[in-house]
Amino acid sequence: MVWTLTSITGSITGSITSSITSSIFLPGRHFFKATTAPKSIIQPDDSEFDAYTRQLTPLDDFLASLRHDGLHPAFDVVEFSHLTEHSRLPGKNHARVVSVTPRGTCTSPCPRASCSRRHVFKGFDFDAFLHHGPNFHEHQKRTMLHEIRTLAALPPHPNIMPCPTHLVVVHGDTDNRTGTGAPPRVCGFLQPVMRGETLDDQITKAGDRRIPLARKARWCRDMAAAVLHTHRVAGTYHMDVKPGNMLVDDADGIRLIDWEQSGVSMFTHAKEVTIDQEAREEEEEEEEEEEEEEEKMKEKEDGAEERRRNKRGRIVYIPRTGPKRCDLPWGYPDWNVFPEWKRTCPRAAELAEVFSLGRVMWMLMEQVEQSPSPTVWTDRSNDVPEKWKAIANRSLEVDPNRRPELDELVDFWEREVAALTARDDVVVAVGCGGMPTL
Ligand SMILES: Nc1ncnc2c1ncn2[C@@H]1O[C@H](COP(=O)(O)OP(=O)(O)OP(=O)(O)O)[C@@H](O)[C@H]1O
Ligand SMILES: [Mg+2]
Image 1 (spheres, rainbow, N blue to C red):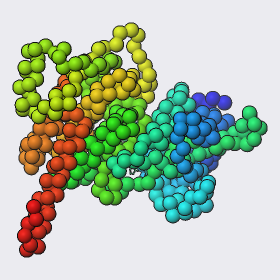
Image 2 (image 1 turned 120 degrees about the horizontal axis):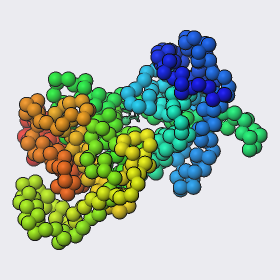
Image 3 (image 1 turned 120 degrees about the vertical axis):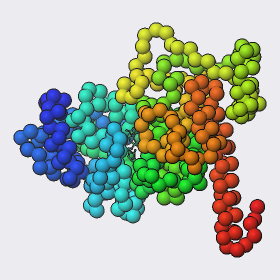
Image 4 (image 1 turned 180 degrees about the vertical axis):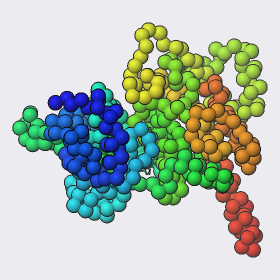
């Protein structure tokens, strides 16, 4: 029965959502038995649950596809029905804090200690399926499985959330091919909970209290280092760099999360990625003389000499002709320029992320929660050094050619962190009655 799932969604949303949040977390086929919502309205039958599981990818197939790509991450496997929900998190995918129930089992050697801890579950549960329109299969594959695959391929970095160690599975109906029962299918993954929450949470919670400059500098350095690693070492892109995707770990460092690569942030995206266009790097000599003169003047002010020294060319953007592309059905915009730019003009992809980093730097320095509001410095930021504002402003230049390169950003923040640390050392040394060590 295709049930009138989508048509009744509106009428049952409230009752489902309110009853889920206070009850046990989707124990497989018994999900609705744990709720108090009227049985007559939302009691699913097996065919509905099977319709859901059939659209999920069998675990074995997914692991085989990773191996096919030369990826061999080690995963423990947890049954979805063995998770208990503790709280819900922000975001479109309804990530949530869970623990594995004591009777919960992991396959393979899975130390108990790691199971008893709290985790963040991210994935597509039965509820997500019920509220989903067509193409559920395609969606979970191109976002959830894509995120796991991207993380599995990323060389580790201290400022990037590592590949999950636990996959979450549900069991579907009998496998018609083999006649065997219910192969496990991937519905999500677990990651350790970061108690520092996100940069956006840190900013919101600080309220009128100013976050120390040394902390801001470290976080800016960490964010820039994560994005540099993403592009130059991992050879990929993020495209959704924003405060809500920066976790603060237990060592007060940044961890970049949310690797679906299926949409840009409404709060931080660069204008050029919303236009379906090709990017090409041209030799400097091709520039108009007048323009070059103007550029030279600008360089004197903004320190872009480094780019010239490295003989980097000028990026030109050529809007695509022909029918409108639609290769990003679940995000904004409808198309994704990043994969192509990574191949044809990697600097264009990098500089788009520099813009997003500029927005995040401004939100952090000014201490405003993430939103699409324009970049305006107010008196709140009187404590922020002018050169910090200047590097954020340069990152936010409309013309990507005027933005600093990713490595320049990292170098800048490395120097600032070092300077602040040295200053702190002096203060500590003087405070202890000793001589400053410079
Ligand atoms: N490991 C974690 N520890 C603590 N909080 C986390 C963790 N992972 C995710 N979160 C929280 O859950 C939110 C949603 O996670 P994530 O960004 O991965 O999913 P999303 O639903 O795709 O987000 P968005 O709607 O922003 O694209 C984060 O913004 C953060 O608040
Ligand atoms: Mg997110």
